[in-house]
Structures are given as structure tokens and as C-alpha cells.
Length: 306
Image (cartoon, rainbow, N blue to C red; front, side, top):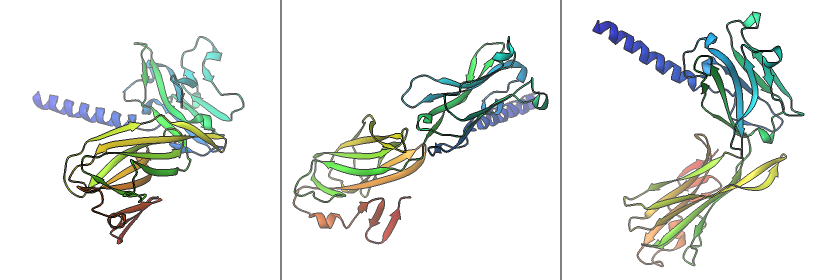
């Protein structure tokens, strides 16, 4: 009996793991798009982390929350047992847009075993940036079940990606490295422009061990310009810390990324000294120099950011 229970538990664990994998399948065929390009949405039961019979589903829909909004809006909805034919297939296409919406369900003789809604967007626009998801309504519990949210943003280049230093003084004129007295408070600001939903974060590499005290401030994105008719945003991320005696070359990197993919980065190196004038700027540049995503370390190794 224990062996049978063990086998059943193993099957259940495998089934849960399988549904978790299925739940990670995106409902969008891409995560970044070009203006006037295309993207495709597909919602079916494989997108949900549940085992559910089709007969338990009474409603299946695709919805989205656009950038800057707080609520989701419907794009298309399929009602399996409608009170009228007009309720069966509902689509919410914005005026003037080119969307091809398809419904598959129990009323479709050729696709009787399939419940699915698809949207083929043929005129991708700036206004399509946001998060997308599916949901279904269970017939017995009348609960709504959602997939995870899948982000979609513009395929815009990263520009003006720089790191600035505060405070500046006569001993710190190098644009990519600086020397400070131990105990001095320092602020590095990472600035760049890009598409909505692209973010940045800080990391550091210490060439000697020692304590760190860091505070990161992410400032709100500010609309700055237009790109192919779209709004671009200026971002700034500040890193504040106190220089310790162990700062014999600490490289701070500000990385710009979308989801887990790094799109661009910039570096800055901090040196500590007991006397501000004990080193010169030229010497500090030997250890690390970075400009426009090209890093030269000890003038031997070159890393290029793509």
C-alpha cells in the first residue's frame, strides 16, 4: 500500500511540475516589437497552471494593461454557452486598428476539442506597450483564473547611457574613475533614454575585500522625446555610498535591461586614499577605463557591449 501511495505521490509531483512548465508558456510570440510591425497573441488552456476539462470553462479571454494604466482592458472574449449568438464571440478592436481575431470552441465542428482565442496584430503601435495575460471563468466555482503577465515593449535603442559623479573636484576630472578620501559620501547617477518598461540596476566588483554601504534610488521615468511617433523616456538611477579604506579599485556597473536581457551598461571605478592628492587621475585610469560600452582592463582585455 505504501508503494502504491509513493507512486501516486510521484505522479502528482510530476503532474504539478508539468503544469508549472505549461504555465510559463508566453501568450505572445515576442517581447519587443517595431512600430508598424506585428505580434501574435494566443490564449488556450495550455497557458494555465491547472488541469481543467473544457466542460468546466464558460469564458476565455485575452486582456492587457497598457503602460501608465492601472487596470486591465479586454481585447477578445469567448463565451462557450452564451444566451445569444452575439455574445458568443466578442472582440474589442480599437478604432482604425488592424487586428485579426479568431475564436475556436465547441461550436466549431472542425475544432470541437479546442478552446482558443488568437489575435494577430498587423499594425503594432506605441500604444501597445504593456502587460498581457489570459483568463478563464470556471463554470462551477465562478472563479477567474489568470496566466502570469507577459510584458511587451518597443524595440527602441538605448541612448545617452552615462554615469555622472557627485561631488566633482579638481582631483576627479576623469569621466570614468575618481579618487576620494576614506569616509567621503559619494553619489553616482546612471542616466539613459529608452522605451517604456526598460529598467536599470547597479552592481559592483571589488578588487579588494571590505564592507559596503549602498543605497539605490530609482527616480520616476520622464517623457523626453518622440521616436517614430512614440514617447521615449528618460530614466535615472542613483547609487549613494560611503568610501571605505578597502576601496582599492571598486568597479560600479549600471546595467540597462529588459526582463533578464542586458541591453547596455556603463562602468565607473572608485579609489580610496587617505589623502586626496596622493594619486593622480592618469594612474587610476590604468586599472579600468570605460566609454560607450567598450571596457579596457589593464590595456589587455577588451569587452564589447552589444
